[in-house]
Each structure stands twice: as C-alpha cells, then as structure tokens.
Length: 343
Image (cartoon, rainbow, N blue to C red; front, side, top):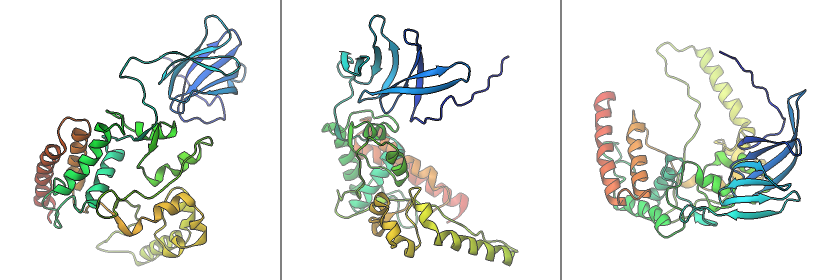
C-alpha cells in the first residue's frame, strides 16, 4: 500500500479546477475550471511541483475536458454547448453540437430547481405570498396542500412547462447557470453574495423577491446565540455569556460582510451597513420574512414538502396531487411527534 501526500501546486484559486492534461508539443499543462467554463494553459516546474498559469480562454459554457489537437497548434475542449476548437490566438470554433434535446438552452428566465436548495424555499415563499401556511397554528396538521399551495406549486411548475426553465434541473445547476450567464434570475440566499462577488467578469445584482401572489412574503432562517436553561445555573457564566453576545451584536457589521443581515437595529440602520449594497437589498424584506415553524421533529415533516416539490417540478405528479399526498404524510409525522415529544 502506498501513501501519497498532496500539496498545493499553485496559489491561484478556482471554482472547480480539474482535468489536467499534458501538452507535449509546447511543454505546457492544460486544465479546466469546469463550472465557469474556463480553459487554462500554464507551465509546470517538475523541480518545485508548482504550476504557473499563462493563458486562459472563456468558452461561455461549462467545460468538461481539454486536450491538445492531434494536428495544429490549438486545443479541443468538450463543453456543454458542444466540442470547441481553441486556436493558439484564442479564437473559438464550434466543431459539433450535442444531440438534439440535450443541448444547454440559451439564457432563460428562471431555472427551477426541484431540490430543497432552493426549490423548497421558493415554494414556501410563494405559499405565504398566496396567503397560505405550512401547518396550522398548533402544528398538528399540514396545510401546505391548500389552494394557496396549489397556486404556488403550479406557478413554479409553469416555469418549466412554459419554457422559462429547462426540465430536470440538477442540484445547484440553477445557480451555476446564473454564474455562466445562462440563467437570468436565481432566487437564492444571502450566502451567495461573496461567491458572486469573487467572479470579476460577472455582471450581477440583488433585488427583493418579487410579489407573485397577493402579498409580500419570503422564506428566511437565522443564526442564534442561545443561553441554555439549567437547573443550577452559574450566574457568573451566564453574565459572561450575555456580555459576549452583546459585544458580538454591537460589532455585527463585520459579520454582515460575510453575507448576513444584522439583528441589532443600530447596526442595521447604520450608514456602514447601507453601504453594503447587496446585503441592504436583502434587508428590505425584513418586514415580511417567514420562518419555518418551531416544533420538535419538524424537520421530518418539512421533508415532505421537499418530496412534493420534487414530484411536481419533475412532472411525476400534478401539483395538487403531489401536495395532497405529501401533506397527509406530514400531518401523520407532526401528530406522531406530539405524542413522542409533547405539544
């Protein structure tokens, strides 16, 4: 058995670098940055094991591999939009397109994910916008199969049936398509701000989720500091914990820069926070955010919403039937949880 030790070969950072290939004609190393569609050419120093990029080519779509031409001085790349020849002076020539029905479409309006990130968040936002809710007020019955739920799920399914989204969008493919200029709108979270900002060639912006239903509403979640209730609390430790939480809260602008909205009003209303343009756009939605219900074992019941979304968006069941079946299962789960954990 052999043990190998991996060490970084370059200080450069990529989104998804892979597919190294040696170009013996030029003594250069080739590699790709898959999701952003870049092909790179660089030198490799065998003595130091270091790679130094020299040139890069933007193919305009995700790329899977690159190899040297058998004849000529260019390279052949396998991209999402087909096989492409890259000449030594950087010109791109399409050699072959994918088979009919398998090509990546041009820029479309809104790629619809059938997965929790972020398809479920989109459904829940629209459910609330149409006046519905996930469960009744005591969390004893799932209500996401209401007329509001059917309206929300139908609107999302129509993104596919009306051609605004390709069918069978893979996990995170909607976001990757946005970064590659193939998706015009992407309902996503504040956690993506810094990733988008790192792509210097990408033109992007942030806006509040549009009002599709009868009222504004948007899914939300939060990070929390918690001081646990104890039978024999140590007052000094509790006081220290409160001091620490207050100290962090007063300085939460720095936390906001990582893609957060500060809870402290004085920070939220400060000029410094408002200068964080993307985060400030998210903050405009604070008055109408909705959080998932707080109940023991609620995650198991919410997984049924994921199931309904997947079945409806992929066309396995119409929206009403997908929601009805999932809501029945979710109701059983929350009722079983109440017996298990108490109300």
